[in-house]
Amino acid sequence: MLSRKQLIEQIKQKKSFLCIGLDTDLNKIPAFLHTYPDPVLEFNRRIIDATHDLCVAYKPNAAFYESRGLQGWQSLIDTYQYLPKECLSIIDAKRGDIGNTSDQYARAFFDETAGGMGFDALTVAPYMGHDSLTPYLAYEGKWIIILALTSNDGSRDFQCLKTDNGLLYENVIQKANSLAGADRIMYVVGATQGQEFANIRKHAPDNFLLVPGVGAQGGSLAEVCRYGLTADCGLLVNASRSIAYASNGEDFAEAARAEALSLQQQMQVELEKAGIVRE
Amino acid sequence: MLSRKQLIEQIKQKKSFLCIGLDTDLNKIPAFLHTYPDPVLEFNRRIIDATHDLCVAYKPNAAFYESRGLQGWQSLIDTYQYLPKECLSIIDAKRGDIGNTSDQYARAFFDETAGGMGFDALTVAPYMGHDSLTPYLAYEGKWIIILALTSNDGSRDFQCLKTDNGLLYENVIQKANSLAGADRIMYVVGATQGQEFANIRKHAPDNFLLVPGVGAQGGSLAEVCRYGLTADCGLLVNASRSIAYASNGEDFAEAARAEALSLQQQMQVELEKAGIVRE
Image 1 (spheres, rainbow over the protein chains, first blue to last red):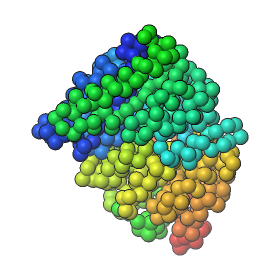
Image 2 (tube, each protein chain N blue to C red; image 1 turned 90 degrees about the vertical axis):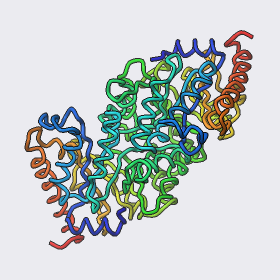
Image 3 (cartoon, chains in turn purple, cyan; image 1 turned 30 degrees about the vertical axis):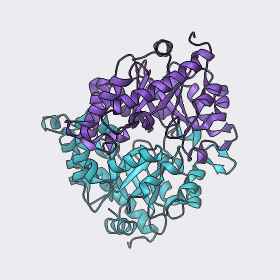
Image 4 (cartoon, rainbow over the protein chains, first blue to last red; image 1 turned 90 degrees about the horizontal axis):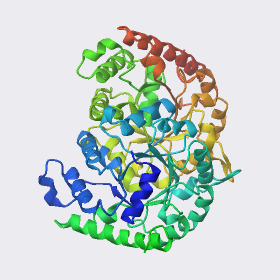
């Protein structure tokens, strides 16, 4: 469990708001790891060991584990167990279903006694409305991170549709903010959405934003910070492939660290500029 | 793999368009099953044995398996393996993510060699747009079933918002229909949405609709048929709790069969009225 206050402390201490995505694909990790009993877990452990002082959150994406069936689900549980407790643990699963089903997803990812995983936060899809979101909020201290404006091309299909009451994603934020405060709810906003961050901040002035799309998807950290930073930082910027696959050799963990360090240093500059940490 | 043609043949042969949801909750199944090595699998097997001649599809909801961790995932794989091949096998997982991640979900649920499951169809959430849907369509012969207008209260929050181009759910159907035909795409439309079915049919005249909400959620089969039936039937009406938990005793499978039979008989009347099967 990591409270908003603890998260902000981590950010100030590490001078970083980096989230590292663990989208670990068995076909993309260095070949020498295939001799380990669980190559994916071994990969994740080494990435975590090499980066945990530079980031404040880790985010495995469930799809990359589910695609390996039972073995993959075991890797996910073992990866969860290995995550450092001072970092926010996010399971990126984008779940969304009716109430009695969301209860089950909450058990799966929040209740360690049920399924072996007790993540701090779960990403959720808002299409089904408020009663698909509220069951998670019954888990005191846990976070939901709601898709608002995503980083992909398809984000333009529906999320930016004009409705009677503003853009669709604005409706999502408005509705979700009526369910719980900025200590329980974050939003996913893609780094590729640069200029929209100012608008997001009008609707979600205090919420942390989880920002994918810096790195492999081409978003700009400076632009995200310009429009998205708050007095409490308010950003978790995620990088997955650009860190995890920085090298395909035996030096992959060092290469991941170098990439994470480069991002941390850019973040430190932004935090200093904004007066959130001292120069 | 079950083609549209094969599905329609099944419907005519069984005089049924019933889909049985396998939302199997360890805490709700009869106590005597707890002596079996996998009580959930045993429950599912008996429900399937008791009902397979009365329904044309089975639909496990992934959440109820994920909530039991590794054991649950094993139950899901074993349940998939036990499903009769003549029935459409639907995994109700409501996934939705960017392209390279959707690829992984497709492997998880469509590619038996990857994770042990080769479902015919997967439910997906549309919020992230076209590129979150297309990766599944690369799997020839597999279906995606897209959330359009769901059965829960929260369906009114966003799905029915008026946009510049009609209601949000109309936009979803329009966009999805531009990606593939009625042989690959179905839509989820809640039985509780009665009068909206006529409008759905304007936008999706040929697509099969997967209709939850008859039974525990209170939707009316007659109303769904009145507005939703097509010349090819075009409906899969799902019941989960009302069948699976019809009795909590040793007779649960017989009770499930009785409930399924009652629904099948109502469906036969509708199919005969519509001239889809002969009286």
